[in-house]
Image (cartoon, rainbow, N blue to C red; front, side):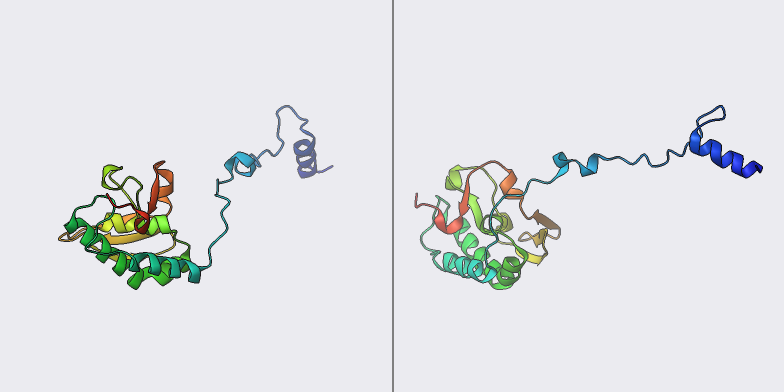
Amino acid sequence: MGRWLDLAEQMQTGKGGEDNRDDRDDRDDRASRAANVPIVPNVPASDPRELLDQWEAGVASLDPDKPLGGYDRDRWCRIVRDCDNLVADFGKSAAAMGWSSLDLFGFPAQGVAGVNLGGLAWQVDGGRVICMDENCATYRLAFADATTRFARGWIGCVGESFVPVWELAYQ
């Protein structure tokens, strides 16, 4: 046989001194293992229209003169205004993109005595949401030049108890 045929046969059989087999297909197979499947909560998706109606009713129930959760009057007025702005400016698109009530309006269940963090309306604190997509919202705090981002789903990873702002108790 010709020289090239001998080399091809040696490569296929592995004969001829050194191992000449083609072992280039050494891809990492870990990506196909079940352990790499993301953990997604088994919660049915809400109808965006129903979700928006729920948000509008919840925000409309907030009274700027009757603070919930033990917040002082100034902070409470900012919270109510931020919730109004959030529903008016981004409510429809946020519901369509799958944002949850806690992502947007989540507050510590213990009110002001709880953890010092919350959903988007809690974070804005008198500022303004600039834009929002499926993954995050960009906002500017009051009297600040820089923007800040809030990741959708982040509040669910904190491990604390949160409720929508309209479910806070009087304290």
